[in-house]
Length: 252
Ligand code: NAP
Image (cartoon, rainbow, N blue to C red; front, side):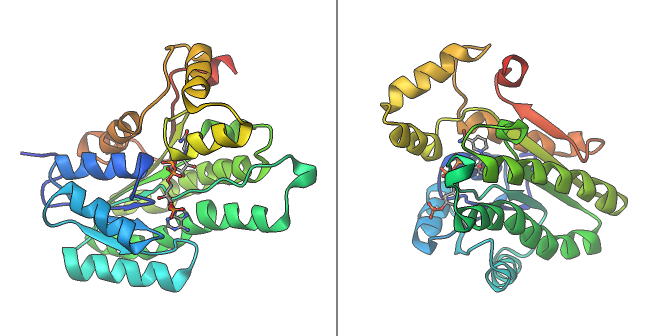
């Protein structure tokens, strides 16, 4: 018996990286998973990799009509919604004096507005059934990171959003928590390596060296945390941000 038998989990940005890792974990533990991603074919391919009975949906989480249509498809095709992981994310890094208004808006749109729209669309079903689990992806960058004024602001915003969800939704059987990952080996961090002109292996090795546990993180590290926070064992935890970073925050 799996911890998520009979549950439907929605994971945004689920076609790859941390999102796919979470989708895989929920599927392995019995959930039906809706993989939401910008590109419908990538979402469908990821859902197929999870096995039978999962769903891939093309959706831009920063656009309300797209989000509402996606949630309707989840309800129609999978029969309900119990877990929401707001994971979709982008970076548009630059030093403040070079950061464009467009890059500020894009990052805010995906991380903050996206989490807001998805959560608003899901919570009415969670409230009605008096059950729901929400995990939002923050980041150690929330504490401040050179070249990431937009991303850091959005990721700290996610923490404030999560605390407020904890207060407002707690009385309805809904838990909302955030995970703040440190360096996780995904295409997002590989793209940062490319931008800095450093080979991916070297970039990962440098980050591992600086980390107290002497390794980088993997999507499975975040998926295990998300699964715990969405399990009934964690029902007395809400509004929290858990740093899953190998201790990076302790030494930065
Ligand atoms: P990733 O490999 O770049 O994957 C992000 C996924 O989100 C992609 O499939 C992307 O689709 C999708 N996406 C982007 N914009 C979207 C939108 N508007 N609507 C729907 N889907 C969208 O990133 P990751 O490293 O797995 O990161 C996942 C989350 O963890 C992000 O919120 C990130 O900020 C956070 N995080 C990551 C790290 C890390 O070290 N990797 C550390 C801390 C926090 P496309 O490919 O089509 O763009």
